[in-house]
Length: 264
Image 1 (tube, rainbow, N blue to C red):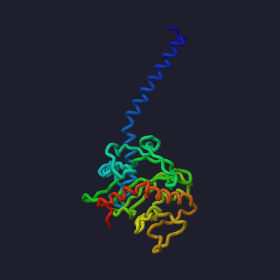
Image 2: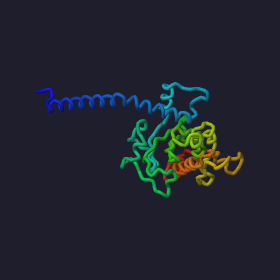
Image 3: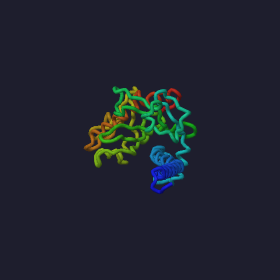
Image 4: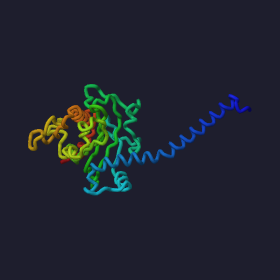
């Protein structure tokens, strides 16, 4: 076959493509466990800060962090049915990918979509901290649309399933110096001890439009405003309204209380 033959050129291109695709496929297979491990490590760092298990002032190694994370009771919640799903793997399930899957995602009714999401996953990983076999903290993922980006975070509840034990927002792309104040540890620290529902079960939590005065009627349910970032602050209030409302985790929390959880 001549060197300038079109058939030979085609075969060379085809062979090159096959070799390259094989190398890429092999790399994906080899790197997948590393990617999953890194994702789990990133997730564990954000979650372990909320568990109360890490002694203040100590910074666990990556291996210690993963060991503590894997020692937690992590389950996949069917949000709409308020029951755990035993078929999905809580360590690898990706709610972000599930959103647009016809079987794993669901449309949010417009009149309930306080987080401005449009759709959400039917399932969510939930993290339970158990002490002597009893629920000590429940950690729930939350997210919603901010001014420029989707805001992702976790909220940890005390065993009464109402008092906030800790909260963190770990991913956002809001206005630097304004909306990104939600990442400040001192602002997130204000969430500790605030309550989501009042005595009759009405949702009350909000980001105030000003400073919350200690001892005021709103202090138990609100945190200080984000200076110059009203849209982002309202978005945080909205995502909390949604996730702790009837289309979010409220049914699950009520179920846990009916089973003896959530006692003060």
